[in-house]
Image 1 (cartoon, rainbow, N blue to C red):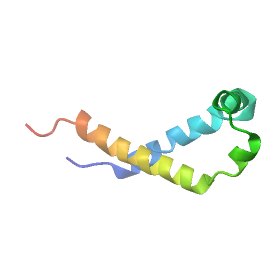
Image 2 (image 1 turned 90 degrees about the vertical axis):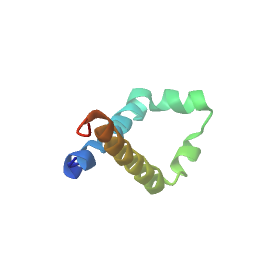
Image 3 (image 1 turned 135 degrees about the vertical axis):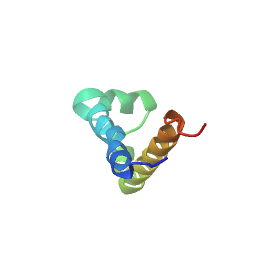
Length: 75
């Protein structure tokens, strides 16, 4: 089984894009902050490179795992 890592790496950006839209203050960001009891200072003080990096890494791992599950090349 040959993995197409370029496609998996580019597909790993999809959760980031959806998250940027979903948690935008103009969409559902303010409601999400209020529902979780956070303040705007809590959000601004977060380590965003770590959060985004881990999100990308886990999305990439998930993409590899799903590809291995879906492609039935081994008999």
